[in-house]
Image (cartoon, rainbow, N blue to C red):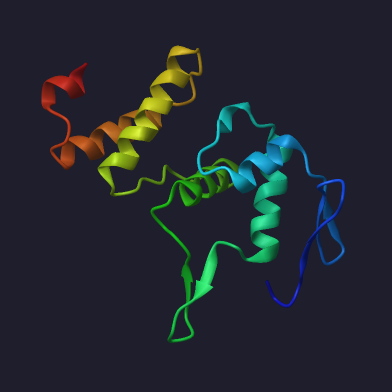
Length: 144
């Protein structure tokens, strides 16, 4: 954290140095829950969460050789951070190699699509491509 302490006040707000992050339910959901309903969280809370992660350098740790590395690159939390960073920077889709994580994400995206979200098609296609490549998904299931 570059010597900065994270302080939580009695109103559930977070302070890092001079920055104060108002502790909204959406921000706290992103901080404490392993899996979140990311589509239900406001863009303002998503932006605050990314700023907090970057300010505290929370997604990195130092290995025994003194090099910085990602804390848990295959975790659900890191996938959420990558998704939010991708939304903000307009990057491509980040896909983990773990088939279980891919299937969980695919289920979430399919439900989102069925609910009317039209912006998930590319990520669904990318996950299906990866599951096909890993031979988790058959060609017939892929076509469906």
